[in-house]
Amino acid sequence: MRAMMNKRFFFWMFLVLGMLLLLAGCAEVVQVGTSVGEGMGRISKEDKERLDRMALKGEKAARPMTEQEEYFLGRAVAATILGQYRLYRNERPTRYINEVGQAVALASDRPFTYAGYHFAILDTDEVNALACPGGIIFVTRGMLKKAQNEEELAAILGHEVGHVSHRDGLEAIQRSRWLEVVTFLGSESVKKLSGAELAKLVLLFEGSVNDVVKALLVNGYSREQEAAADLSALTCMHRFGYDPRGLTDFLEKLAREQAGRTGQGIFATHPGMAERLTEAKSVIAGEKWPRLDHQARDRRFRQSLNF
Image (cartoon, rainbow, N blue to C red; front, top):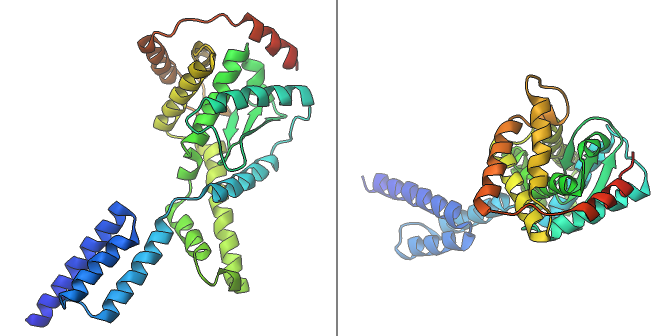
């Protein structure tokens, strides 16, 4: 009977310690609990040490991706995308979208990333824009052709900066896959991995990259993520002095085109343009943002983006 009670105590203590670890995200919490358990004579010194090691390992595996890891993952995602699309190599429009993109990013909730924001044009008539983790953002020529002015361009780039700021791309990675990657990276013997272990780590990383690419090109983000990115675009546009109606003007065009068909590019991965338009208009009306004059920016836009 006494042995059974000890087992029950051990089980519930282990469960509570696990909950504390999930809630607090700190191995020290577990160590405090096991110290108390050992001091009360409920668990042995060996059990305490084993639980502490398990908690530390679990904490390392559950930690969020660092900015450096996000950057290298994003570079691999960008390289994969460039394996499917060519870069549009024209210095003037590329420099221009970087100037606008950097301005919008500075006004965002995440103005700086590990290696900064970088904007590039994909040489395709598909209508799309893609945000890689860490701050590499692609916009297609097809998307830029639909923009009528710099306000609409700022809206496009601000929306993608929003995805980077919220780390939406990372949400696409299978959690179990990334936990294995982190476990490998957190291992004290990571520099002594065997050939088979190194091959497995490469496959896990490749799988994580493909998870993000699939989200960008095939599945798209959730409606909640798209709405949050729209709100980020509206906010940073207003902060920097752009007219937030650049987003609603652009969404209105896309909503008209999306009605009654699925299509490719942005129309396949971004359903619900009409709903996004309604929500964006509601935000602008609620904030009572005035319509701004942007004729000078319009001239700069026409001079810089002349495909």
